[in-house]
Image (cartoon, rainbow, N blue to C red):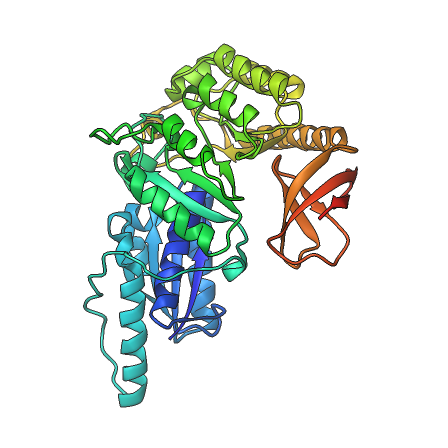
Length: 435
C-alpha cells in the first residue's frame, strides 16, 4: 500500500502524524506523494477558520488530482465537524482525536480493500476500519519524511478556559503520558539515531498534573530526568504558557547544555483588558518579568510568542499598547493570528466584534514589528558561536537558539557542528569552526 500523510497545525499534530507514519511503515506501507498514494491521511487543525479552509482545499485538491485515493481525515477539525468533512470528495473515513490511535489501521484496511476492489472490480462503501490501539514497535530514523529532529508528545488535552480556544473541546482534558513510558520512548528514539527531540503537548506546562503515584513527576521533574542523560541528545521545549514557565525551568535551561536556548511563550496580547477578556491567567507585568529574566540570563536565547489580533472588544488603544510593547520587547519572532470565531467558544458569543478589514490591518502592523524583531535578533547573532544540528542535505544547521544557518557543503544530515554566524542575511550564513 502506498500512503501519504498531510499534517496541519501544531507540533502535537506533527507528533501524532509521525506515530501514524511509524505504524504504516511497520506494516509494510510505502510513502508516496498524495497524487499517487492509495490512501491519504489528512491530519487537520481547527485553531482558526483559515486552518479549516486550508484542510478543505487540500482534501479537494487531493481528490481532484488523485480520484482513486482513499482519504482518511483526522485531527481537531475532524473532531469538531465530522459530517462536513465526510461530505467532501474522496473522504471515506473521518477519525476523531479520541480514536486517532486507529488511523493507521484504518488506512491499512482501506488500502487492502482498495487493492481487492481493483482486483475484483467491486464497488462498495466503506463500513468499518480496524481496531488498532496505536501501538508501534517500528523504528523511524532521522530523515524519514524530511524530519531530522523527533517530536515527542508528552501530553495532550487542555483544561484552561481561554475564551477564544476550541482545542479543549477537540482534544479533551489534559492527559499526561507516564514518565517511564516517556523515558523508554526517548531511549528508543536515541537508539534510532535522533540527536534532537522536541518535547510537545497541547498544554505542555500541565504535564503530570493528572498523574498519581510515587513515580509521578511534573514538567520540571521530567526535564530534570532528561537532563541527567549521558548521551549526546538535545531537547527543545515547545510552547509553554507563561504561567507554567517557572523559575526552576528557566534555571535548568540556562545552566544545562542538554536543552536548546529557545522559549516559545504565547503572550496573545499586551492589553491587560484584552488578556482578562480572553481569560488568560497571567498579567502583562508577569510576562515582562519572565522574558526579561530569560534575556538577562541567556543573551542569545530565542524567545518567540503568539499574538492574537482583533479579539472581540479590542480597541485602537489596546492595539497601541500591544504594538508599543512588542516594538521594545526582547522577543525574537512572532506568530500572528487574526481572530476568527470558533463556534462553541465564549468569544464567539461576544457582540463587540472587530471588522474584518481592521483585523487584517492590525495583523499586518504586528507582522511588520515581528519582522523587525527577527532581523534585529539575527543581526545580534553575527559573530556568535553555536552548536548546530545539520538538516536537509547537510548544508543547513539549526542552532539551539532557533537559527537556520547555511554552511559550506561536506557535512551529512544529522551531524553536530560548531559554527560561527557570519551574516544575518536571507539565508543566514555561517562557518564551521570545528566538526
